[in-house]
Length: 206
Image (tube, rainbow, N blue to C red; front, top):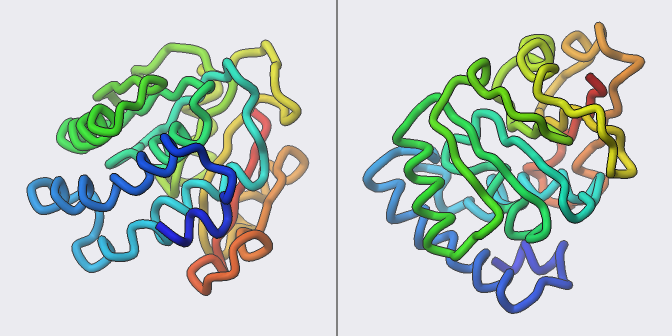
C-alpha cells in the first residue's frame, strides 16, 4: 500500500481504505478463481494496482467522463482507476464470466458506486464512451477495429477521446500503422521501480 501513497499522496481517507482492502479481497478470491498469477499476488500493488494507475499519470479524466475497460479480467485497470476517479463512470467488460464475478464482488466489497459490469465479448458492447482503456488484451490494430464504434464524438477532456492501453516491450511495429495518431508515454518516467522499465501507456486516437 505504501507504494500507492508514494505516487498518489493526496488520496482521501475513503480512497486509502478502498486501496488497502484490495490485497485481502484479491488474495481471497484468487484462491477460488485464478485472476492473477499465484506467484504474482504478493506484487498486487506494484504490478497490478500501480500499473493500472499509470494511466492517471498521463491524463486526468474530467468528472462525468464515461470509460469502458475492455478485457478487464479481475478488474484491471478499471477498479484502481474507479477508486482514483470517483466522479468518472467505468464500465468493465470481459468475455470470461468468472473474472467478471470477481471484479464485481471486489467493487461491491469496497463500496464502489461508479462501476458497472458486463460479461460479454467486446463486439457485443454497443454503448458509447469517451475512452476505452485496456491492459495488454490484444494487438492495437485488433483493438481499434473493435472499439471504434464505441467512441463518442462528444469531447469533454483535454485529451481527445480514444483508446488508452497499458503495454510492455517493443511496440514500434504494433504502433506503426497509427503513428500519426499515437502518443506513447514511458512509465519509467513516472514510477522508479524496475518493473516499469519497459512498461508504457499508449494513447491512440480512433
